Image (cartoon, rainbow, N blue to C red; front, side, top):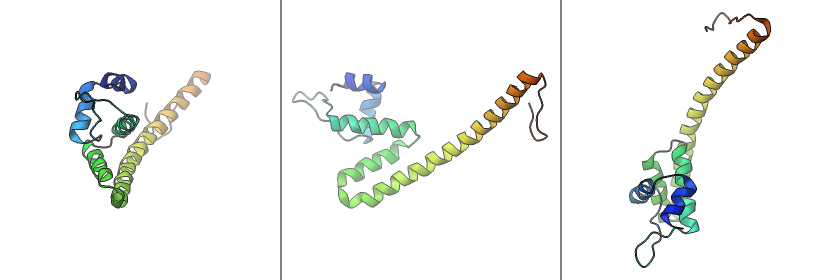
Length: 129
């Protein structure tokens, strides 16, 4: 695939894609004899992984370390697993925070649903408008 095709597939800019390669978030991409990037299925899978992880809030540094370890081989299984576990912990913290917000929104919506039926909006003692 060309850089343009990969960018269209993942809705990212060529600059972002080149940056990911430059800083090691994705391994070096295969190139044609003329030096033009030619993304293989494996390259595209790395791009997809990088975008997924970045969207989840995983740092560029953490992703680059993961790729570096991957390239060192099977002796790095534990270190790679630890990086993924750390990323999961951070994402879980974000999800927990969002869940608190979601619970609050659901509560407020339920109060407005009752108000629409009864014409009276009332809050519990600990809640405000």
